[in-house]
Image (cartoon, rainbow, N blue to C red; front, side):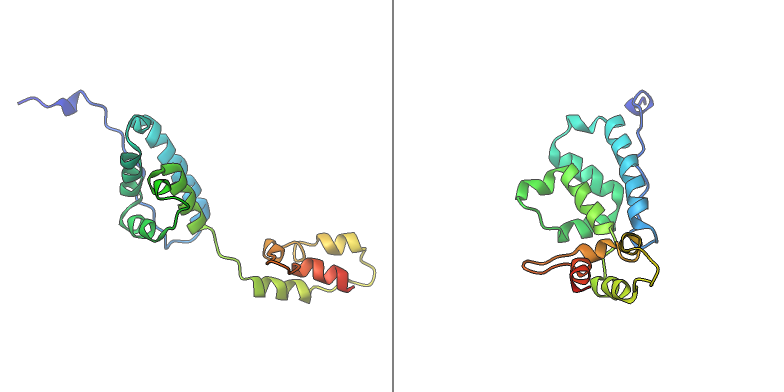
Length: 149
């Protein structure tokens, strides 16, 4: 009995992604690159969008399939666009910002008597991404503090 498997090249997908382990954003970026390599090697661009996303979810593992079900997309068709699904997973892995804590750190850092304003303003404690969160009609803490001085 002969098999076509002997003549067919096997392309191995990346290992399942462990969402609960530390450094998820960095590990996801690495996993995504591995998946893109697999996508190309397995010639998935020739497959339907449904198959592309199915291969992505299969490679990422059971937990990824559960998380995918929780995602909301602008349009239903986006759920079957593997690039948009990858982007959703990258957003999911990104750490959440604690705005209250970031603002506390910012407000706790006072300008020293001999410290130039520019140095104080550029201090990493004052230039936190969490401080840039502005809601409709509200200023961020950084802008509030500069105006309050």
